[in-house]
Length: 161
Ligand code: ADP
Image 1: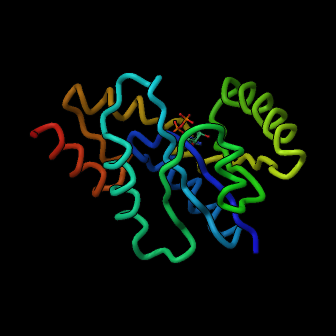
Image 2: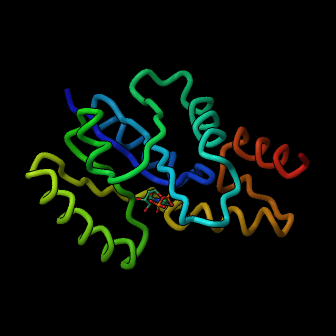
């Protein structure tokens, strides 16, 4: 059984992320989305718990997509969940440079057990990012092209509260 880990901040999950999850879920038997707790990231919109709840709602009908909370080294999280590979999405050369280094480190520290698989979002979602969504939302503009309606509704509710 092929099991992969898709780690990230997902604050919030965008259609770019969802496109990567969809591709990975067709390529592998199981995809585990790991919502990484990163206290260094300051401008969080949703708490880790809220992000997890939201992603669970998005994938409640999918039986090969799971969501977990995680912290620390991604490679340890992958090993903990018996994942053979880490999925990363590539948007730009900047992403590529970073991922080249990370995959090498992760392969080394896992003793060759954890590989990295990079995927590309379809063209409509290629440049969508969580930070862009938060920025457009804060300006009061329409974010429906970039996020699922469930995410959009939750953002509106959160802003009101
Ligand atoms: P991180 O803080 O680890 O970058 P993100 O939640 O921003 O977490 O992204 C998680 C992963 O999804 C990363 O590999 C990122 O490059 C990828 N990703 C995000 N948006 C897109 C997109 N529009 N197309 C392809 N990959 C994406």
